[in-house]
Image 1 (cartoon, rainbow, N blue to C red):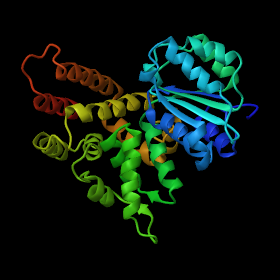
Image 2 (spheres, rainbow, N blue to C red; image 1 turned 180 degrees about the vertical axis):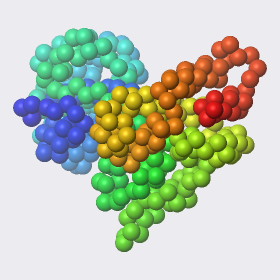
Image 3 (tube, one colour; image 1 turned 180 degrees about the horizontal axis):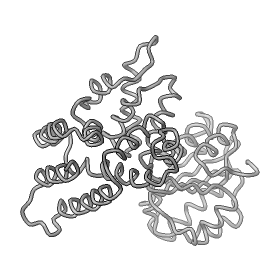
Image 4 (tube, one colour; image 1 turned 135 degrees about the horizontal axis):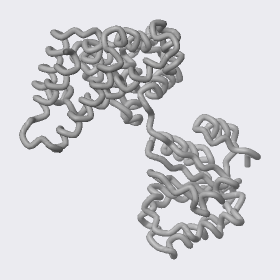
Length: 343
């Protein structure tokens, strides 16, 4: 057992790769990717393959639907390992458990040879006694959703770990097309990696277009570019394409991306040197390549107009959900929004 646990994803993984497993892991949060990654590593590496039949138990929260079920879980955790260094007892979908009371007593005196893992997809009230106990003796990890900047870093890091590189535009296309669905991002990147040659490990926009199905000319990335540079003709071309091809893009899928951009643009106005790409990049915590868009947009949109655009987006979002809007469809709302932004 490690003397001190690092409760970041990288820290937890580093400890486990050294063979240091805590007696308790509570893995919670809204982002399932990291919860599953930690849980899967434990299942694959805490025990040798030949040890798993007798020493590894995986349960589901829906099966622990009362105090009796929770007591059985604790009894499993108290068992000694059979011809192995440790036991692993894991509860997947622990948010469906009905009772955690039995865990409080167990956490007062845990079985040091057991690795008990609770995978809780959602938030647990950290004031609960069993959570505070688990924090003292093991690992409490909260997996949160990634924002736009973090998504870019995640994509680049994952690609780098696979001994490949990616053009900035290709990364942006992946982020804009898939959003914050990390498992799907990883799946799509894996498809791209398989298509790379050994002598050219670079993911290009053309490859993303071909393998992921994202048009390099008609996608949210190009629409945002057209808006940044106030290219009215191209923006209207893309909106028309989206309205004719709803699967490629629509108000519902594109509005969050545009809202995020203008929200960050408003923040960029507070940068000490708004005209310097390096200064804006440092202020926003993004790459200089990404900062170029914000520097350009600040030349084309005043702070006042940016606030008006953000307000208009909130209005369009409400209307798209039927609030104060009995008749206007999403296509017309989309056109109205883009017209408002560009004029």
